[in-house]
Image 1 (tube, rainbow, N blue to C red):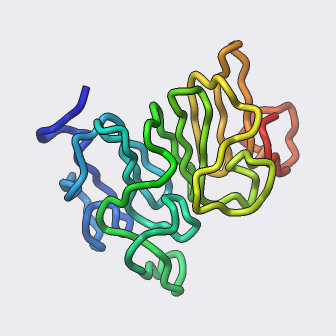
Image 2 (image 1 turned 180 degrees about the horizontal axis):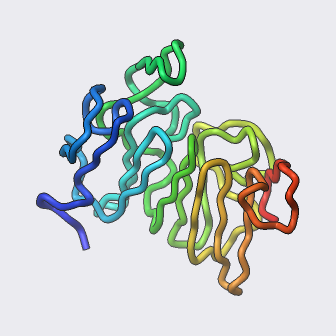
Length: 193
């Protein structure tokens, strides 16, 4: 069901830079300009994405690792994190390669989407393998997670992601500490395990 009037999914609040249509911090719900009608919303550490009724995905906030395609039109500096200006957008930007997504899940600096086919696509930071493409190369284009066909549900967290597959099994990739793979070691898993 699409929300085309004032609704919780068309609002956001935070104390971080650029999630609300301006680069000012907000501490109360504030309308996100230019997004909607929204079907689903997901928030990462410093970026937010919405799945729209027309099948597109739009994101705003920080894009320094390409978490919404490296196409953010502006730069911002948030001295709490870095004095170096990074790509960011105060307004929603359409993410290429995620049209037709049926579910969104965001990690710290990466974005994943489950597609209608059951395939999973991710983009952004990949330093710990959190994109699941078998590498640790950051991606500004949505890339398919290897060996995760038939995903039924997707969940991303700080530096890892997991999916439930059609056979009811669970696979995970990225930083292994949060994956529950029977190891207490902090290791990189650049593909689903």
